[in-house]
Image (cartoon, rainbow, N blue to C red; front, side, top):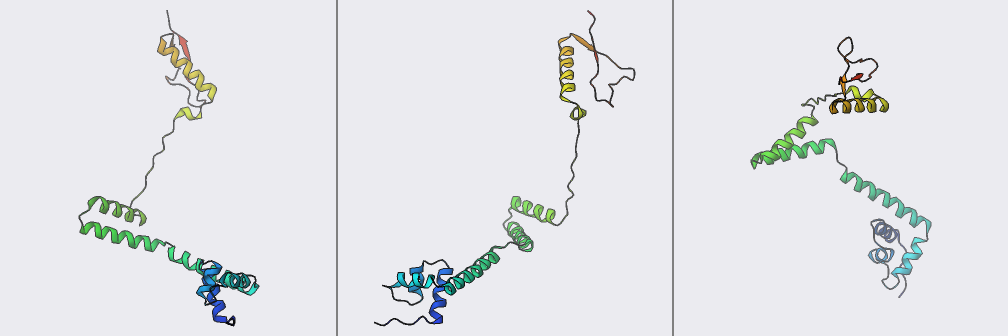
Length: 170
């Protein structure tokens, strides 16, 4: 039986099938090439630079189409959340409704985020100063020392040094 020629349609069908993920043999059969020679035909076609270039072009196109399909936009997310909120309301599913409304409100800037930062004066002390303070506090706790009060009644805040302690009388 004589071989049918490589028509542009058959070559395109082969390239398309390979680009979509079929093996070369499967693609050759799908494109109408002889089943017993499909593997050899696929190998011959794949060696041709113009065929490989076309396969690469089609692969890029299919990948781009897949990426476009799964691209999530902010508008789509907001629409899905709104639909979920409506469905939760219909079903009287209060936890889901509350959560979706909270997400929608945050996304639309309806909540003000407030954060409070609390800093300790101990943060600016060196390791040596912290160790001295710990030693002095342990001495006070053990009853071996009493804190010395400075003239102002407070420890110095400019140097961040711990209060000096005097030995307890006794």
